[in-house]
Image (cartoon, rainbow, N blue to C red):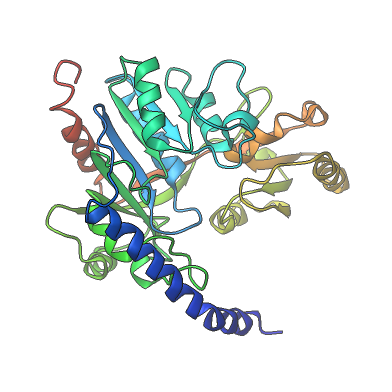
Length: 357
């Protein structure tokens, strides 16, 4: 069976629906452009991290990058929607918070950056107002996955697009993965091409910049995926790859392929259990994971997962005595341009935080 042909046929069938989607998105944005619908300009400095497509372009690692950059300079907060959480309205994370309360990615931020205020709210404008009221010392708010939400006008926009699926070459939902108009890239201050080949050369870089056609106020950066040191989820103890022979890989993320490519280099026996993005694990899921783990014949074996999935798996006591290992992921800036990116972000904040930075 030719699956590629089937996918192409399906996409051709869906193209008329994509035209309707694009038309509705056009009208939506024009209502804001023509001031028919107002957009809230926050009093506090705001940095938006987002994309034009559905799926994983590296928004969470970019939020974490910004947190590492800014947390020692001012009081930082993050506002996310809290996708697939089991609560409603505005919620600020505390010591009793779980992934069910705020969603997996906000919970990941909360665990890794305990000094940062992490909040969720469906209506970003109301969430910003509520957060500033509760935390008046907040110097900057990072808006996670909010580029397409015109109800708020951020002070600084960071737009991400994937190396192997540039927004310029993508189609609109449902035939493609674009959820926002391509033309809206002009609202970005910075465009980051993510998940690049680490060996990308200047020729390839310039071709992509030419394809994107940035405006004079924009700069394009390039990052590759950098995997960190794996650690045991329940103990926090780091592990060494040479001591691992086999793993059950559990992923509930949009695109696990880069992770699979990375693990191929580790020469592990790998059993991959694939779940939908933001999947809520059930008791039945855990039983299947345990069965797969017990079926591995190697002595040095682990249950390997992403940090995003780990915050949902920790709720299951059945896993506490097993080597459940999370693998961190970060952005690695190419062409030695990380410092330039940092200065662009800090340069935006300097006028607003002169007494801090």
